[in-house]
Image 1 (cartoon, rainbow, N blue to C red):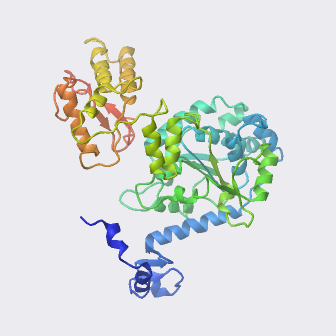
Image 2: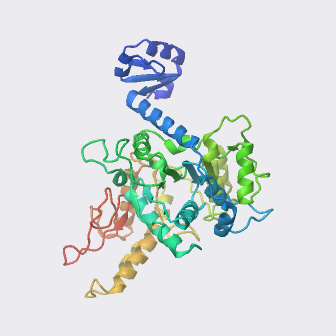
Image 3: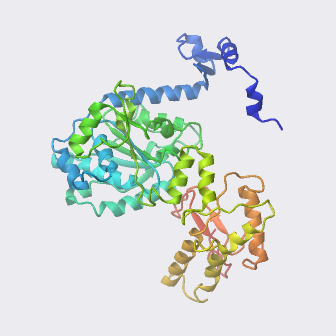
Length: 483
């Protein structure tokens, strides 16, 4: 089989561009003639776009440039407010990037906070909301703040997380009461119209808000981001949160990833660095960030990357492996796995599709690490409350919690869907291994212990797309094992 990359090797890109430029179906990006607007394709430099997506990019670009040009008035006592939320700067210790992110977000109508797992994005945004809302409450004009996420599951998780953290904020009750914890989906926020690509809120009917925070922004595609920016009032602040290295959008476009292309290097101007140091007390002298002395990185002035994970240390195996993967260093990642020098990373090399070592891993897990599916399925059966106990009895909730925790402790993830190493092939292999070990009664669709994945939001049940449940044993009551 010839790969597409092999076919393209023999083709000359310059020749293609010349041929496209004279095609009646292609308009040049700089061509403003009326008939050019009817052509379905747009050639911009060496990039060929469908016209609709080229238009989305232009709308996003124009909106962000306008927002970056708007300089907000920051509180005169910003330094004291930051110290109250984060504590005083500690010279010689690691830079408090969360404090810097909050500081930058106060001075513009647009900002981005990016960072990997456990770097404190949610903690940062809760303190940012307190930082923005406190002066407004003091002035008797509280801000209208809305929180959104691309999916129902992300919205539910953020709602729970923010609710917990707002309670611990060291602010007045008046300020705490004006910090929302309710998170909606972006579609609901804009008011999607079923069966169309249109929304109730748009450039002619703006959203009634002053601050919008969007979590998991890496999942927002090009079209949705253009619609979201169109619907924002000119005076409103937009704060995007997300990990630039994960959860890319399903539809076309990786907006957050493109906007955060310079986040690792920083590229703050001398003026931005000086202002940050002045209001935060943090020193960027030893930050190893690149400096923008030419004014070539205007977007970077409003982007902060959180760099210190509270979930795992920088020197941990999983931390180093993630960094090598994100930096596209496959050979270095393989070396780290092969050396087995970290307790938190384990590599199992299989000799082929029939290597039984995979079955042993599925059943028993690995060494001192998480136990395999035998532990989870044993807990499901052996710890089940006695028959006859009412479903309202707390013992059922305790049992369900233990079962879900055991299931969450061991997961088999796949990079592809098809083939022997894809989702479908490995699901069949895992089911066969569990049946052979007599851990399940059958390999049909609804055996006891089968995980169930929600594929759409069900607000009536309070279940969101991506939520995982477990199929229980069938009982005499038809609805007892809801699927």
